[in-house]
Length: 345
Image 1 (tube, rainbow, N blue to C red):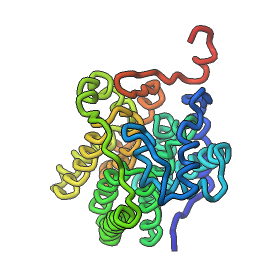
Image 2: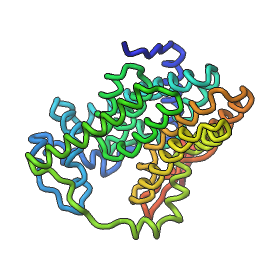
Image 3: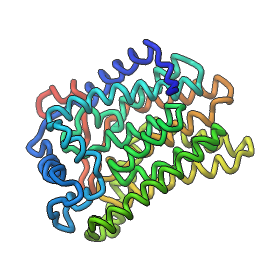
Image 4: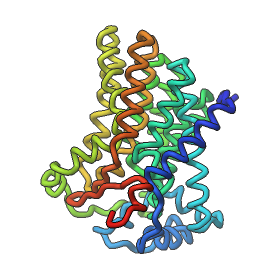
């Protein structure tokens, strides 16, 4: 069985997190709304023979991102996806509440952490991602894999994440770290099996249909030049939630759980490297959310006062700091709705 044990309070908390994220990240449909949708629609016509994409374009990266094409193929249009994405945000917040409650055993603390997630760009993307990037779906798959206890369900959730965006491959290191921290041998077996399945699927599609992600320009130089904005963007993507992976790593080391600590630090380092190696730093940083839950699991047996202080730091910083969005070399502040309603802001 898929044991979710979701209570009414978790759904109420999820709805409260949605209100917070819409207040802090009000959706604004701009001129580029649905930016990728036209290409995904053409890709959906024949996912194994996608339309030509210029090698340096964003669309060229979508060759193996087949889940969005299947969603469109199922008859869901851009408007329908925006509605589903908003509803998906409610589910992700509820799932976050399940994971946090599983380890903190404190309803108030769990509510606070979920609200903190809603106050970051990670939660905000469910409100304002109108470019059809589908990071929301990939992150939902990763969170789902950490939430459910059923191993087949974990397998499916991870497959959805991987076939939605390749950055989820890096984030699976955090899922492995979670298995190590919680001593879940089944989860530790499922995750590499999913990766093997995904790699095999890509190899088959490449060999049979010639699918390949064209080599685009080398963004590393530009990414390095833009570290002055990408590093703050990376930090601000999680805001106060950084306290959990940092404190979690320290806790594991202090308890001599060196393998679990190394897994957690490796997951954070992998996701940070992936985010800094591309231009859309803040978008890529959303794949750090599983590492946040790893940190929460790591401090489960710490004294209640320390856990409470960590939760207060996470919530306070996440609510107090505005969202800083970076696509190197540019950045922008996403101001809360009340400030956006003021003139000249």
